Amino acid sequence: MRNAEVTVLGLGAMGTALAGAFLTAGHRTTVWNRTPGRAGGLTARGAMELPTAAEAVRASGLTVVCLADQEAVRQALAPLAEPLAGRTLVNLTSGSPIDARQSAGWAEQHGVHYLDGVLLTTPAGVGNPDFLQLYGGDRATFDAARDTLAALGDPVHVGTDTALPSVYDTALLGQMWGTLTGWLHGVALIGAEGPGGGVTATAYTEVADRWMTTVRAFMGQYAPQIDSGQYPGGEFTLHLHSSTMDILAHASELRGVQSGLPQLFRELTGRAIAAGHGEDSYARLVEFIKVGGPA
Ligand code: FVH
Image 1 (cartoon, helix red, strand yellow):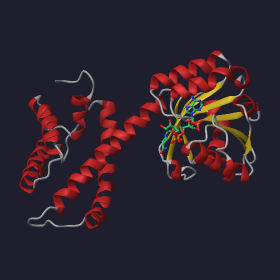
Image 2 (cartoon, helix red, strand yellow; image 1 turned 180 degrees about the vertical axis):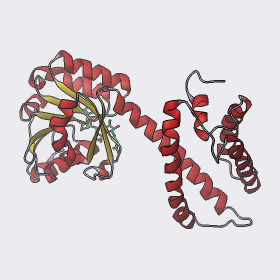
Image 3 (cartoon, protein in one colour; image 1 turned 135 degrees about the horizontal axis):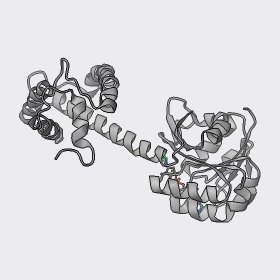
Image 4 (cartoon, protein in one colour; image 1 turned 180 degrees about the horizontal axis):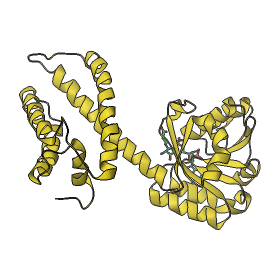
């Protein structure tokens, strides 16, 4: 839907990028910022800056709020219940699942259609469909806003629970840190002096990037095992994982690499094998990661 009306509350680094992406997509964009004077580049591109948040909200059917934190959102939204009533509010401010539920409760109380969302990118990536943006809330509300939100990237509805995007955000960041730490361990290991060492990070990463295809294949194979609770080990059992982990630990020790990862891998796998699951797949370890899993 071209030339839709959209309002952006907050012109920090992220809010400015959001408003810019809406303008690039051809949407009539209204902006407001607590401190005036932040909209110069945007008004030069056709954005309308209004002096109060209430006037800005009234200018569009869809408002996106992206402020420093959820306390700022609460402060900014408090006087906006009446102008927001019947309109759609999308909250792209970082926060906890509890924050999301509280904002959704406030919105419902005042007849505001609400979506909570996360943008898994920095301002530079806003508008790039390769970067994830996840939304939680009423599906019809999402469908109505989807074409406008598509200006920011590729919007994905993860469910009607408004707390979901926040949990996805932190889970995916945890996956990113785990993957990057494993990659850094590999860079340090193969870059260290010694037989087969001294390889540059760039050279190693050309191979490591191709290896991620295999890692993704394992994720796709293990997800249904986790959902079913059945973990057939097939050709790669925890016993085999364990023996190859010993090689990683030994090589890391010899080369002075100290990420703590070999110890973590061996501790987790050791618990599962001690509990009798040595013939199971690596996915069995989820039972030892989950809250309340076997100690
Ligand atoms: N920047 C990033 O890379 C990350 C990417 C992922 C998402 N985060 C989250 O996005 C939210 C905004 O982040 P930001 O980088 O745009 O933040 P700032 O540049 O510091 O701008 C903050 C804006 O918030 C306004 N503000 C602060 N307090 C209030 C308040 N009480 N009432 C109204 N507005 C408020 C501030 O206004 P001003 O100081 O200019 O008057 C800015 O517009 C954030 O949740 C990140 O975690 C960014």
